Amino acid sequence: MNNLEGLAKLIRYYSLVSTTEAGSGHPSSSLSGADLMTGLLFGGAFRYDLDNPRDRNNDRLIFSKGHASPLFYAIWAAAGAVTEKELLTLRKFGSPLEGHPTPAFRYTEAATGSLGQGLSIGLGMALNAKYLDKLPYRTYVLLGDSEMTEGSQWEAMELAAYYKLDNLVGIMDVNRLGQRGETMYGHDLSVYEQRIAAFGWEPIVIDGHAMPEVLSAYEKAARTKIKPVMIIAKTLKGKGVSFIEDRNGWHGKALKKDELARALAELGPVDKTVRHAIPKPEDLRPAEQHVQQVRPVSYSGEKPVATRHAYGSALVRIFPRFPDMVVLDAEVSNSTFSELFKTAHRERFFEMFIAEQNMVGAALGLSLRGKVPFVSTFAAFLTRACDQIRMSRYSEANIKFCGSHAGVSIGEDGSSQMGLEDLAMFRAILDSVVLYPSDAVSAEKLVEEMAKHSGISYIRTTRKDTPILYRSDEAFRIGGCKVLKSSKDDVAVVVAAGITLHEALKAYEELKKEGMLIRVIDLYSVKPVDAATLALAADDAGAVITVEDHYAEGGLGEAVRSALAGHPAPVHSLAVRKMPVSGKPDELLDYEEISKDAIINVVREIKGARKTGRTAGRKTR
View 1 (cartoon, one colour):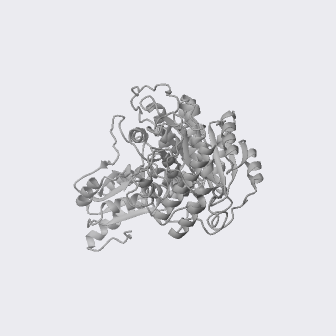
View 2: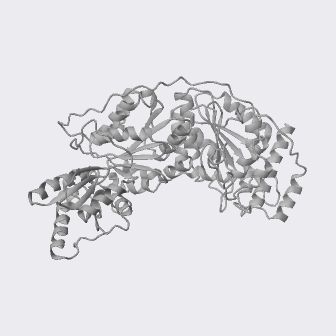
């Protein structure tokens, strides 16, 4: 016990000196959790191979309370994995010890700091251990009391209870004070206890600074079966330094050098040589997965098929080649057609119910344990999880997203169901891939390309059945496009994808009867975009028309204009610009001026303007 108390003092010392050296950080938040983390790592509950942080058998530790990163780095220093010299690079440019944990630091499980996401990530890791790899590792998540007002935490809690994740342990550092004052419930731990129990978890209430209680809590958590466990620990912010302990106004403030001297004097002598070994886990292996050949895509072309249906078919078809796949859906699998995968491989399908933020966080946890998660829901509902999607990129996630029911073309369901911002959202993610197929063949081929690709990718699928455009042996690559109609006499280039590509092809046939030809390009890869093909087409035709069932901001049109920046050819953008309403799909395409008739009108304007030597009337945006 004395050894653990000495380690806790050393960890507090490291948290203080590193933040003072940095001139910023969160020492007070780190001090409150020092005893909890000392007891976890060095009290015998935690199993971890320090030399192999990615060992599949290691227990996982997620700092959902990411601003307590000085504590996170300090515990690994106390374990002997980080030197004090390295600790003093905290928050400095080029240091892996960033202001909030990221994978730049080798012991980080997931990037955190946008509060309220860690429990969802832990849920994904616990699902992997219990149902997929079937390994005995446990996932621990350090939580702050402030972040327990975030809804995604409670989404994670109800799903963890539903899946009986007795390998998931939350550790709530209830230090009473948030960034600007007292938290919602302060030190009233009974409120947390009642609510957590109501969600189907086993609550364990302790004094977070009494080491015997801390150790006992971890022992009880290890014995608990069927239920996940939440350790609810009463702590004091700034514990161990009298002039900041339990005092408001110290959040996110490093001690000045004279204040540090006072604080260290209060801590007393620190033994920097004190160590306590972390026991290693057993060397266990999950069942071996075998890669197999997949059957080819096969569509007769006799009847239309919705790309959302092709998405579900593709998941089933490609699974033998990608046996690490897992599929998550938010209670709309009969609309996204991920239910086809559920029927074929129920053990690798997780129903996440209507809790999209948690679904994305859980997908990240699964991804970080080596799985390839495909996540599907209506495109509109993925916007709820924008922060989780954004943060997953900083964890170097390998997640495949599918948004169905995109655009006004879904029809009568109305604006709340119409994904009209999704392309913009996913295009804004660093290094993301954004795909928008127009028929079943391209949808299947692109789902397979997503599975091959490492990183975040998004595929947008359509509700309506659409004609088959491509032969089943047609190849599709990320970053490509398809030129479907072309001649040396093209008046303009029409660039479209999804439902509007079919409108462009209808416009082509009508304009052809009038003696006007247009080049039609299927821009199925919205990011990365095939700039070379677009530039060549603009050179040949002299004008470009983009048409998309998405808002003008951030969508296909802006992707094309960015690719053609500096090119003299004008770009005319047809996009959703009016308040969406309910109606039949064709009515709505006409209403928003993204139908074949709208395309024909712009082509006529361009042709007429050339005859008179003036600029076409349609605004270039």
